[in-house]
Length: 161
Image (tube, rainbow, N blue to C red):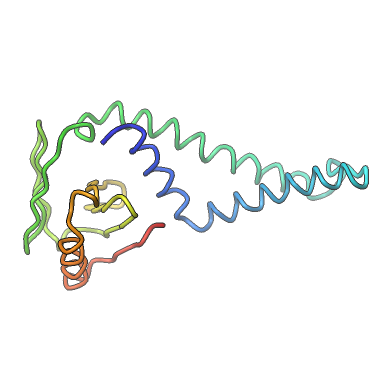
């Protein structure tokens, strides 16, 4: 996995959360309303009671992506296993993940959830840890078999767009 792929995946995971999209949308609306009201009516939103609420939204909308950039960069540099060539072996019992410097076995019963994007299959052994599998490295037929296997095991599948 390269850093641009890692960064893009982190943003995709962040913006898959509805509350992040809602905050960002309100922040953009606040900025647009401020500009339009100031230009058209010479009304400054600074005098409005809604100003502090808008400032909080804008601050959050800017802080979230900047924080993701910083955390993704630090995480990528500190986790050398993510940067290694990794082989995956799927079976009825679980998945074996083998890198250049590590090897791990995960049972399906121990997976917290599975998330699928256009480019990635994410296997979560816990809420904070994910195993990244490029979907273009798994045939469409095998990906469908994995989805059926996850459902049979009762594993939640989250579709991230």
